[in-house]
Each structure stands twice: as C-alpha cells, then as structure tokens.
Image (cartoon, rainbow, N blue to C red; front, top):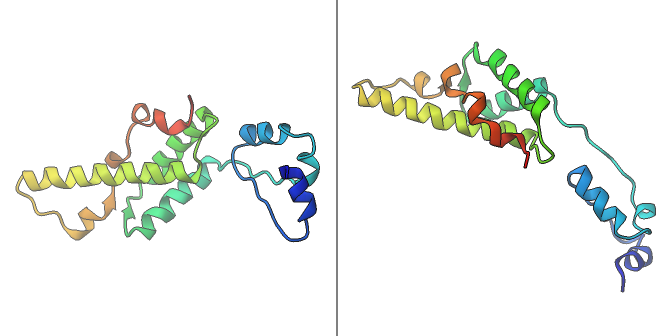
Length: 147
C-alpha cells in the first residue's frame, strides 16, 4: 500500500512527524503531490548568538563547570560569527554542546600542563572554564555546518 494511502486509511490512528532541516524536508514533501495536504508545518527558527551562549552556559553548569566572567562576551562574539557564517547543516544547540566539549578538552590539557610543571590544580581550577579554553575561530570552522 502506498504511503499516502496508508496515511489516509489510518489518519485517526497514527501521527507521523517528519523533523529535520528545511531543504531536505521540502525535497521529501515534493516526492508525492499528496504529501503536502497531509501535513501541517511548524518551522523553528535557528538560535541566535545570545541563545547559543545561554545553551553553552547551562550545559556547562549541568556538567559541573564554572564559567569565568570574561568568557560570556567572547562566547557571544564567537556565536555571532558562527550564526553569520552558518551552513545548511548548522547544529544550533548541538553546536553549542560541541563547543563546550572542545573547551572541556582544552581545560583538561591546561590541567595536564599545570601538573607537568609540578602544580597540583585546585578543584576550582579543574572546574573553571577560562577564555583560553575556547578555541579560536579558525578551529571552529567545521562547526558551521557547511559543505
């Protein structure tokens, strides 16, 4: 049974949700002229730089990390650049999460360097993200979601 016939026959029994990026969904809906009349469309706007910064801050807090006060303005600037240069596959909140993971990795390397120098980092040092833990733009290109 074709998909549209199945949907019509079971329209009071099922709920079908297609979720994804606009262009691929548009291609999917164009495959069968009957698809469009069966679906309502809800489109969510991408996050802006302020929202991405907030996602980063909340995710860091949830993972038990503190964020130094000077980090927020730099994050906002970096996310402004990302939003302005994002590609079709930009990950929104996922990108903020990836950036956090990069920062945590850089923090870990910073702690290794302190230990190698004979220091024993405090709990606050081990759990605080600094400006130096945020990668520069040229290391974030792949997060833009372009080709």
